[in-house]
Image 1 (tube, one colour):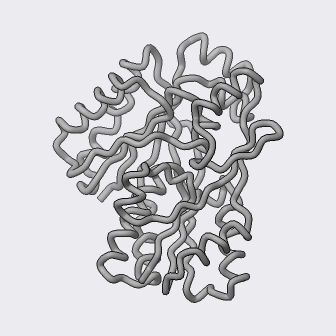
Image 2: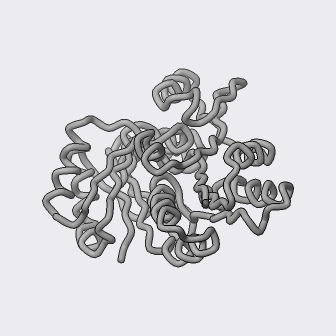
Length: 280
């Protein structure tokens, strides 16, 4: 039996976690002197409230080696495949590798650097779960995922630059000008790193649908199993609009909505939305 473990930045819903039997490894979110476990005892709403009150950005931290060892020992599987947020964004990958060494289980634990974040990880995790259900070994799953991960398309369009500024990811002047001009950057993930791809203008109904339409050719060339709409707190009307557009494309067997967790939300702020999928 192969057990699939993923860190909490995969942003999969409780329903998906239960459906696929995934074990989640929480990262840490720190609000000042208070420390919380992502997805366990902190909500994005509380995070936004604290950040707006203090003018500070929450700090995030990887799971400790001990945390990871304990999570592995809880399961008692024959083999494990462990997914982490991109190693360029967190120490979680290196900590998971260290945990495998400490347990002297490197032959049984395959740690995969997703080179991604949010449901860009989640897409890989679900693929791995389906392979495990079909009797594939940890080595076979790892080989498949490493060949697949460059085909994962992960991007988000940001509503406000305030949180990127608080987190040191854009200058105060850029945030001030961008918010004044209602500029909304599209942030994409490539080779495990985030970077700006395009800027949109206007109100959410306009710029979010423009963002999705810009991906139409890629969406039509996507793996048909599933597509994610992942957001950090958007109006239902906006999410439904995106869902309707994707439904009309007729490309996907399943359109899944998920909410971004505390770690992802702390960096992108409220109103962020992404459409994530795997290209063929």
